[in-house]
Image (cartoon, rainbow, N blue to C red; front, side, top):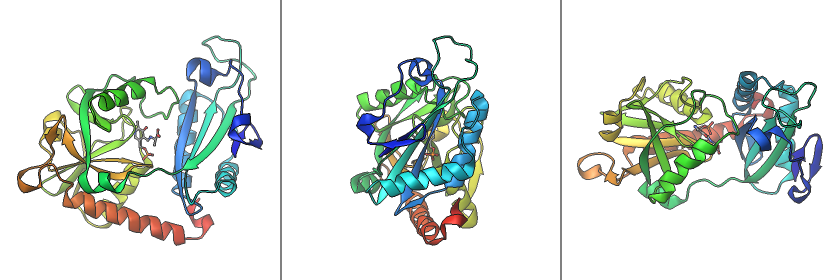
Amino acid sequence: MVYLNGEWMPIEQAKIPVLDRGFIFGDGVYEVIPSYSGHPFRLREHLVRLQSSLDAVRIANPYSPDRWSELVREIVARNPWEDQGVYLQVTRGVAPRDHAFPKGVKPTVFMMANPLVTPPQSHRDLGVAAVTVADNRWLRCDIKSVSLLANCLLRQAAVDQGAVESVLLRDGLLTEGSASNIFLVKGGVIITPPKTNFILPGITYDVVVELARANRLPLEIRQVAEAEVRDADELWLTSSTKEVLPISTLDGKPVGHGERAGKPGPVAARMYQLYQDYKRTVMRAPADAQA
Ligand code: PDD
């Protein structure tokens, strides 16, 4: 069952007018929220990020945080899978094609849930291939916009080379992945770029930073030069669906040094474990403590 503008229906029945500005201009924002055994993960944080995306593109939030929380819980309850990925998007609405904002138009709200597809065990055990690509996106990568053409092209560049993700570089610095944030480990220190307009402020990124701090793992949030990416002991990607996933080759070369080269590293394994433990605690907490 999906949700469209106040109604629940099977996905085949969900239709939007062709003049929806999401369709015509990519004029909208979205969120992807994982739900484990009926518990939406970090729901409040996703809704805060949704609000910042809406503010940035000047679309009035159609619902209060409480209403959004109810809707997210309801879509999870209405769908059968144990773990789900909830996708929601808000576009500026339907209006004759004109770049300037239309007046008096209601935003279009769409939500769907899918079975949550996390990486297969082989990816966890062996790590995944990634390639570096020049980050040619716009300067507001902090907005979770549905205008994802650049991200699609960047991801496809990775797939064309047999890799699962592209690691993006802008002016010689690491930004993020085409649909993930990137962390590296050097000499036992976890390093990741700061949250600026050049990256999406990932919810998983925040969890990883919090877990590193809580467990006193050395952590530096700072700009990362391309050379450091290429010389890292470990590289990981993080996202709501991929969680914490080790990258084992970059541009066809093994990540890391010595015997460990090309194999997922120990800090990634530790962080993955901390992440799983954290998920379990959240799932035990009462619903209202989570959102
Ligand atoms: N993408 N950076 C980009 C460009 C992303 O698209 C995503 C997530 C992330 C990680 O954010 P989070 O940890 O909040 O999932 C970083 C989602 C999963 C998607 O578009 O499917």
